Figure 1 (cartoon, rainbow, N blue to C red):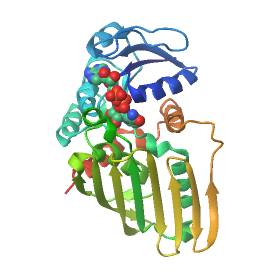
Figure 2: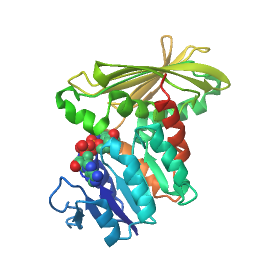
Figure 3: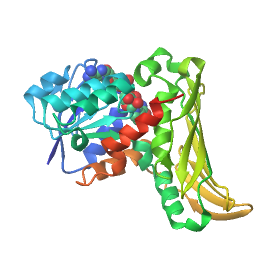
Length: 311
Ligand SMILES: NC(=O)c1ccc[n+]([C@@H]2O[C@H](COP(=O)([O-])OP(=O)(O)OC[C@H]3O[C@@H](n4cnc5c(N)ncnc54)[C@H](O)[C@@H]3O)[C@@H](O)[C@H]2O)c1
């Protein structure tokens, strides 16, 4: 059995709870949230609820603590789990909100096993259309290197105002890390990123260099909260061969084309909600005993360096 403690019972916690409930080896040991008064239902039961993580860790011995709290709390709560328990910790992305927090976690390594115990929920790297495109790319070396990636992530957070900034900090902090973790499935990041933030942090434009099959390419990343609907798409261009792979992260679909020729397509049965489609394979990997490296501390550190070293 894997005894799980869930910290932060907000929007994304609903997806964590839904996917954890599907896994027979998981027991929900406790939940923590200062704003939630009572226990949270899990498979018809109500595990103990706490307002404070330290008190929960004093009373329980979890194997895994999931942090689904506002971004600026991740670093501090991760350190608390590392120092006050022997549990692994799955931190919602981004792992940290600033470079000092990354340095502090690195300093803890040695005293505690940061590399072995800290995992980051880079969920976009597990999205089905990303998985499909990564397999397609690997199967077609004759397409040559990826030369340009263009990605646009829109979230309808403008209506949530200050609440969105409190939970997610900025569009770049929130979507940028999703875009970068998705990119790591296709290319090697060669950052640092060059980022221009506008609309008070609600929008961003970023360019970042990468390496693909021995050559350098450039990714252009747009994100914004100034919209009434969620929409996320990316295009990978293989400039040498004229192939383009188009992936729609909202619909979880994709296709590849060269000029007028359709080369490959990807769809789904429409039955799996988008976030569940991300977190189901993420948890399968995490609990497999051999977590995908994109969940590991090194991947998070690399993504954080590129993400936060914005010029
Ligand atoms: N919403 C999404 O679709 C989504 C998707 C993937 C990742 N994330 C990430 O997950 C994190 C949370 O996002 P959200 O949308 O669920 O935010 P949210 O604001 O809906 O929920 C956060 C919850 O954490 C609680 N909280 C705050 N401080 C706490 C503390 N010290 N201890 C325990 N609980 C605490 C809050 O009371 C709140 O209920 C963010 O880092 C975000 O980037 C969100």
